[in-house]
Image 1 (cartoon, rainbow, N blue to C red):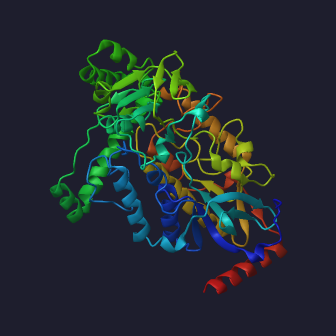
Image 2 (image 1 turned 90 degrees about the horizontal axis):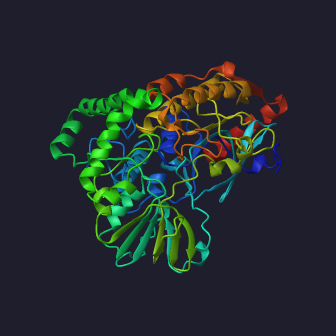
Image 3 (image 1 turned 120 degrees about the vertical axis):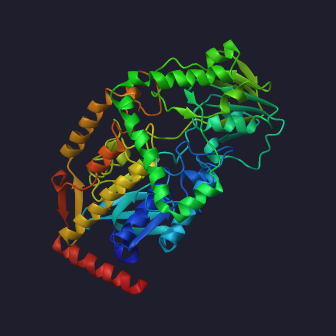
Length: 516
């Protein structure tokens, strides 16, 4: 199929908007479209239910490290969060609730994995091939998220391992870890939840740590019935709680983005937390980072350090280098026998897999356009890809607050994007100007130079070229202001040829008649 279309558009369903993914970003986009009066859209989801990363990650101990009342949509407050930091099952239930409350079920296409998206430059629409058929759309909103495709390291000999191997995001609940020799690879946000959860049942647990993390105690507790009743009866109290959580984090941003030396107090708190939990000086030394706190994501846990002191736990202060049968060999030569390997090694964040499935106006994929690093306009649109928008795009991540705040800002941008297309009328498309994309990214990268994330550590925030293409170097308020409106001077307006325009309008009218 060429970029100019296959000539079979009349055989395919056409929608105004196709949303890819049904996590927070995709469901949020669907709600916002409906609130804007747009109902001609579908949500394409490869799995059999909604939830995104909170559906896929069901490992033992899985929970959020952002307070519940801040990690939820402002337009869909939940007064009944059971804990201050909610577990995976409660967040997933919340997303199901949002789906039902806002009437999104009719728009869902579950089991529809997007295999390829191609821009048709003549008809000004996207041709979308899914595992269940084809369709076309005027606008695509890609909300697949950066935490959707697990990253498995290429370890020599892994194929010959006789035991069980799985990634934390693809947990095998049918495999019983009781009495087993379990190796956990990685010490990120997932690992510090998994280790304390499986330590009591594992016969032997070995943690392979390439780099220690800074860990602060997690102030998690059950939210009382009285608190929940208060939030139900007086909704402004829940809004005030959310506002306080947000405000505290906004005040912290300057230390992360402009004055990393101000993080010294937090570093001292983390060291104190480590010293209280780990008395063995040798183990404590292995767990003490050598980089500035905040350079990698700060982790929250009150049971991670205690779990590492248990008699059946070993810490290997080195990465996994090789597998020889059932023997795991670390980079420092340490050898460990294992029955099961759990990879807690993160996701493809700086090279989004969906980018290989998006073919733009020049016939190149988004992956090819981003081969030297991801970049977009205001975290949303990419040069060469008209009427295509991503939620949680390049440089929209946060190091200390809730991504839901950023998602809602991008939904504002989406809403105005759709309004602008309506005002333009006819078959039109908005293509971000390369000059605008580059100008935005130059500003972002210039601001990034002063941040704690660029102080020298190696993290998943950085791409292969050492550029931070994931995080936003400012406050959520700044980002909201920057995405409140679409600036048409940053876009080129594309128009379809008159004949194509008339044919497209007739096709849409016919499709709606069939649906009706």
